[in-house]
Length: 363
Image: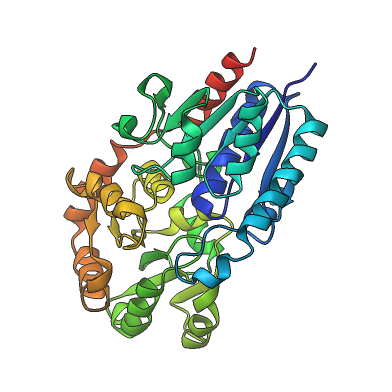
């Protein structure tokens, strides 16, 4: 009998892409395995998971809205409804294991699995664990973490430090710089800046790039600018007819963007950090200031301390980002030093280690 596994969670690329990497590694080790994803209706997993070739079921669930308490009125009803939906799915599939990757849709799935004696596994990518993962960790079979020192959140005997799974398309990419630049119709003779604000975009970064666009292009840079949906129309209008800038709300094939890039500006979510280590790119991090316990700053500082990245506070981005980019672009020695140092921090087999451990636990 082939094994059946449910992978639950999502909300952002930082949860979805490692989940897909784990699914691919499981398939590689056991091709007959059946994998079903469970996510939240209306969230990006409902689009990205089928694109990766997997089936997904959506739950009627939303997270707690901290900025508008009135929007939380229907939350208890949605939570109860989602538990009923989970129950139907789990009873139908009868999974051998459930994997949670974070995001509020993982909570009812893992909670139900744990109540019914089904082995559960958690992947916590951040250096500060999410609240639902902390609650679920007590009864989990195994907890895979991206970083050391997670005993303050989880039972020490259940933790396995694996690093964060990077999609094979990125970690094993053989795409050349020339191919990357051709993909974005950019010039091979110019230095290329890649701007990524996470899958949902980053307003402060977008505004700083918008303001400094002419300055950047005058300094000889060309730009691949991933804006996220909220800023996409404004950026498109701002760059109409500008051959030095490629812009879109989302980059579907990040491996081409990384291949084309000489310098990167990014948020410092755990998955972005893992990917940048794998592709060995000089990076200026702008940590998202409202991340729980400021964990994006913690993520970035681990690299800054090793001279593997630069950091600008979100509050200083408008005035300091563009001058810092231009200064770094002129300093080839600094870029090479950063490349060497960031490459030393790469973990390339986290997905395989996690898949192996899950399969071993449910034999």
